[in-house]
Image 1 (cartoon, rainbow, N blue to C red):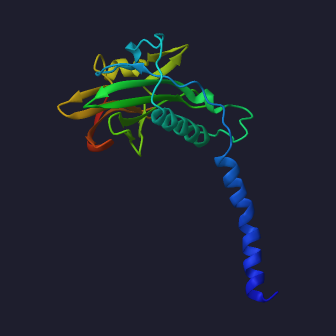
Image 2 (image 1 turned 135 degrees about the vertical axis):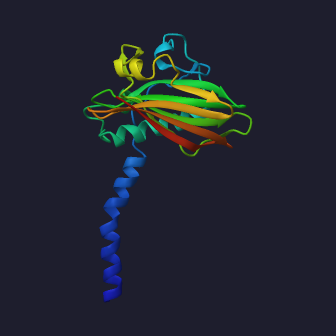
Image 3 (image 1 turned 90 degrees about the vertical axis):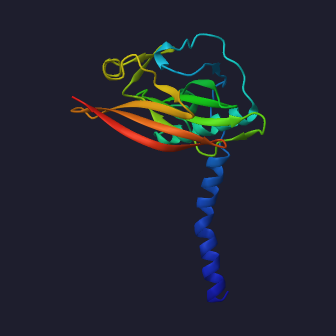
Length: 212
């Protein structure tokens, strides 16, 4: 075997385990929950949503998107492929479906595997064209809410700084999200505005309002 063939042979052997590992990971069967949604309308304050009402099924495209987001979130926050200590299904809380400018806005509510911090991912589905957002928006609300049984309970900081204002609302043609930043010494309310371009949510403005 000449030197060129030997180098090629060694290279193939070197990359084979990585390829096998990638294939194993992508084809692994994760434990996933039954995924349904609750119909809600804007404006939204998560603590006022009744999560006990019967949920409904969603289009397969939406269910598939949510399953993919759950697995990605589970692995990002320390979950293992073998699901030895926690399962992907442990990250799921609920899904909300919101009518939004002739489309459907979905809010996937997740919790970190160990600490149960609240995270939300937003994406849009057009039921007429059967197209879905490529990118989901991350909406971190762990400083604003905690899980209690099958409810979301507003934190004292959320009630103090955001008060009775909604977490998500529409201003004109814009989708507006509020969230609380708290680093132990100072607090700020972040106000982010998005515009819908096709089925993608594009940020157009962001402001931080610092509180004493």
